[in-house]
Image (tube, rainbow, N blue to C red; front, side, top):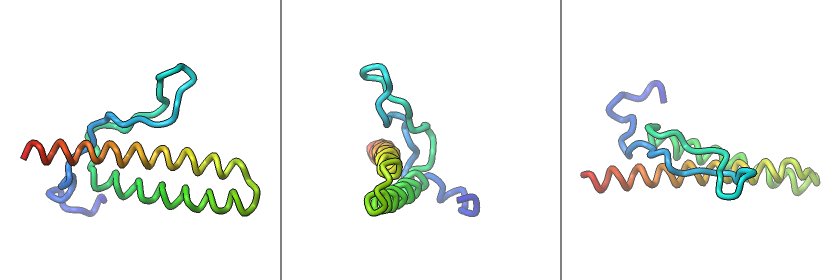
Length: 98
């Protein structure tokens, strides 16, 4: 992403910082939130990497009977979903403003 021209960065919009993931110990509290102001293009690309990692961890965890990898897959999937949800909100916001 560092090599992309500045006019291409954020062409889909910027993350809004609303999506969260992973339940906290206190009811209704979440552990993580997507940071606002990140490029939606990059957020979606990173979500794809997280989803691939989750898929691989899930497969290996099941095949090798490794519960820790199955839990890692769950956490990676939650993070990917938060990134995609927040990027979607940023894209929608940009489209509505246009």
